[in-house]
Length: 155
Image (cartoon, rainbow, N blue to C red):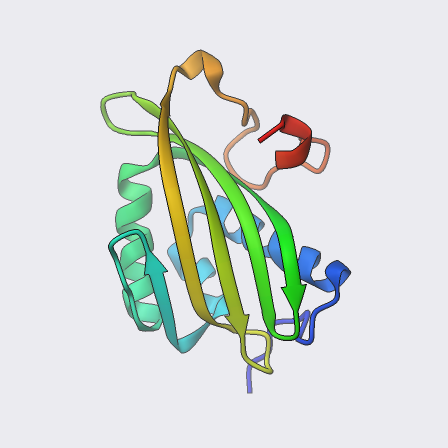
């Protein structure tokens, strides 16, 4: 059976590692890569969408990144216990008209014994921002280790 370490139960260190791995995958903007960390029957709540299963998640991510252009994400561990992890995040992107947004949110994650995410509940708020107000400045892809995180940015 497929596993995705680190495995539960999580320590603050292993949960932080899981969070960074998720951030890196999402910053790839590759739905095929991202869905590999979810169970086949994963259940999500993301704004007004409720995808179930890897294929629906893949389709959701394809739609997301087709409209959220130049997407850059930072995640930060909030809390963990047993097989659950709470995360806060922010991402910046723009739409096809050039309007930039910073989206803030919280996620609650639940993992199976193999380290695959079986549940993801996200609450997200979007803030229109001027391009000059952006804080996430790195080439598309993985956030460099030296780039500040959310706490360092005051977010």
